[in-house]
Image 1 (tube, rainbow, N blue to C red):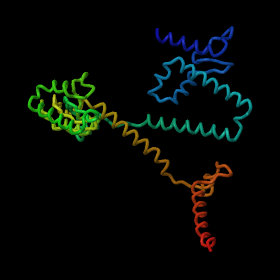
Image 2: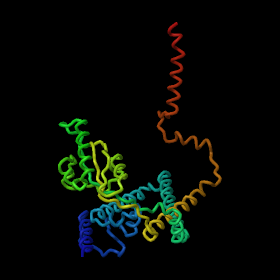
Image 3: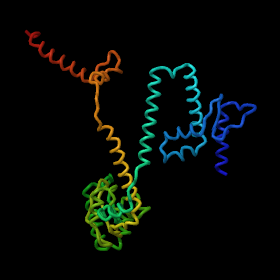
Image 4: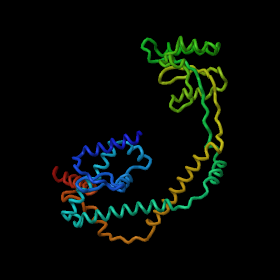
Length: 330
């Protein structure tokens, strides 16, 4: 039902772009729209869709407005191309060269795609198992350290650094003497504005997103209820209490099988494609030095000066000025 509604919406939007003929002829099954005798077919839209990454096509065309824009764009290009042919612009040498270049580029892409699709792929399942056994350290799920902390801010205008140090020292002593009272310390002393939501808990305290000194202090805690030394960050002074520590976990092959296969397949195809394209670069090449050199200025305006020439001219002028100074002074 949703698809039908969208289809009707697409059609209505397109019809709104021009007057509907009083007696419209039925369109061929593969024709999307017609304007002034110019047709847009599904093949035309397919060709246009090739310009959109495959992973984005479904989302792109799931929009009446984008369908309208695409169809109207194709119609406009087709109508202007017809006008160009009527004016024999397709016979212009420069235009013919561009057409040939477009054909060459399209065929080259088609050949690349064909070569990729025709590749005979090895048994990646067996290779994946072999890779896993040789690189098990790559497939470790990093553990997490959860801590609770008290922050004594040093940016409080009513408290200097010495006062902050004295206060955090008092908190650290109380925390080590009574770890079970840490909730009370957080409530009474912590300047962390998020404490009302998390009561000072940091679920992933060794995350690289946190201050390095804070993460390092959390990493050194191993026993639940263990209290850290005083830690200094840009926010102030902290005392941490370890809540729990989840150790690193070795992932089983079945858990990473698809990931390894995808990586090996991608690497293999990339290597094969690089090898294929490098074959062309490695073939003997004969170049015309004079013609190649002429390309540097072929498209430059008459008054164009290359950066290298400008630098040489400046250096020459500087040298001439320096040589002229003794004569002027004399």
